[in-house]
Each structure stands twice: as structure tokens, then as C-alpha cells.
Image (tube, rainbow, N blue to C red; front, top):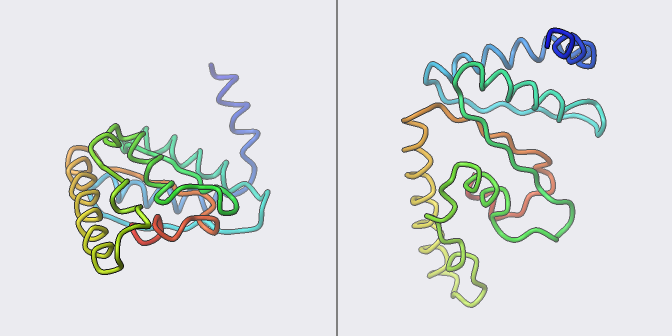
Length: 152
């Protein structure tokens, strides 16, 4: 087991300053302070590995971490990031994405449906966060569908 930890440490090269900063933010999150952090950079520089480390640290602090990845191009359905996250939280069955995703709804009704939908998702996520701090990791936001961004 110690050998695994050593191997894991050897693979994680650099990003120590970033990890220290994110660990500090996780401690604030664990103490009840909401926050937003963004990890940006070129492809292949280790953002996903850094996120994996952050999620492991979160678990150590009793922060529940969930992760979703956007799909390149136009292949993902509306609210795809949130479908993934709510599924991991075990509440996807409580939220109906269909009416708000319908293209047959007039713009005014769609805005009203969307507002009610956003409220329902927010209330449910807040209730879970009251039980245990939550960490959301959204990867590849540059590919995210507009609906997921609006809900975010």
C-alpha cells in the first residue's frame, strides 16, 4: 500500500502550488464556504489528473465529489453535464428534463418551465449540500451545451 502511494506521488509531478491552493479552497468548502475555482490550460498539461487529486482530497475532507465531462461537438443532449451529476448524486429520477428540453414549447412557456426546472434542481442540490458539502467538477466546459451553462 505504501508503494502505491509512493508511485502515485511520483506520477504527480509539478502543480504543487496549484494543489496547495486547491486544498486550501477544499478546506474552506468543507467548513461551509461556497466557492468556484477554474482550472484552465492547454490540452495534455494535466488538468484531469489535477482534478482527480482534488476529488481524492475532497473525499479525505468528507466533501462529496461528483464529476461530469462535456462531449466535443454537438453530440450531447441538453443538460448533459447535469444529467451526469444528478445521476451520481442519486437524484436524477427526481428531476424531469423532458418538458424543459422540448423544442415544441413557445419561448415564453419555455422560459417559465426552465425557471421552475432550475429552481427544482437548485433546491434539491442545496438540500444535499446541507447534509454534506458538495464538490462539482465539470470538465471541458468549452464543449458544454448552452442549457447546462444556463443551469450552472
